[in-house]
Image 1: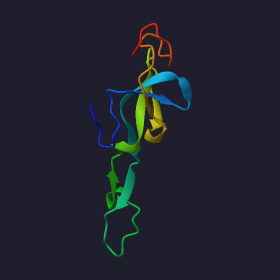
Image 2: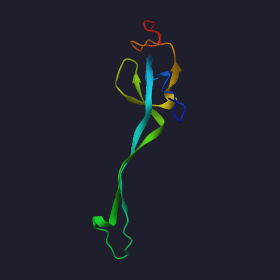
Image 3: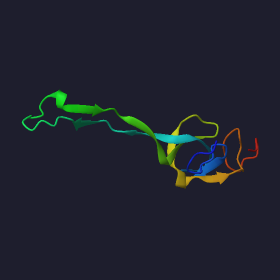
Length: 106
């Protein structure tokens, strides 16, 4: 699956945080836009003390432009990393996830 910002989820990568381990990309990291209260009352003599004067904007999730969720090959713990940290690799073990191991070559 090719994502909008050129990160291919079908490829395998390495990251500086774990230089000897193969990483697969799950997809874009979900970020949450904080909820907020907006003033909707336009009466000039109102002191805006009532909840009726405000509208609550519900928090929204959106895809990050610069971060992806990844897992180490052979693991299931999800981490978020910057797309700029990803380096495409092809020399890794599908069993243990170690880069350079040839037991189950990727």
